[in-house]
Length: 221
Image (cartoon, rainbow, N blue to C red; front, side, top):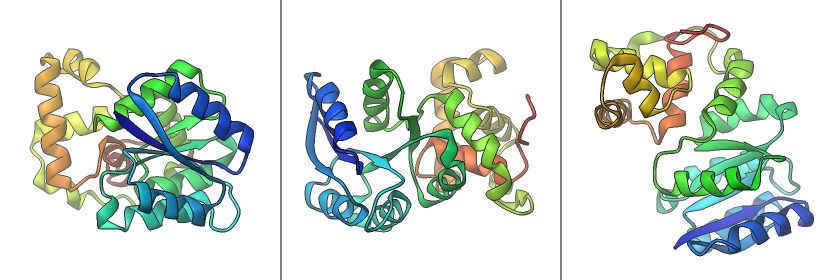
């Protein structure tokens, strides 16, 4: 059973998410929170697998709550999905740095919400590659003032190539086709890169790809 916490200051949205998720036999909503402080308390108490986190909330916003949760080693298995709109791009950049595992837009299709929860709970942290890529490209300039490629020294040439494709939002299947590898081999490369770079998840690899200049905003590799 995948345990989910919902943090949003709008009761209607919380209720809608709860109804969608609880209709699935493998998903369980363990609680709701309407403020950032309440969200941190909820996650600390229930230790859910996935947290659907709004950004704009009173008494500690979603960005603050994300930072608090990620900083707590006891909550390392709680994967945070930022539920946002494109108008909040400046906050999304900070949420990425804080350790969010992915993103959804508030008007996302119900099937996408359910799929996203399952994907994050499974540890892949690959949420809507196109959405993630577009968000990152629009805020890439805020991630780091100047590229620093020193982190890439631990990677092989093939791993750098794979990291670049991850940065462009490609899935393991797509990376495999591009590099003439099996999806399993592509996944193995991604896992090794995450280990070498001490990345929490795949979204963090996208951040590294932008920070190091391996991927440039607006450039299609």
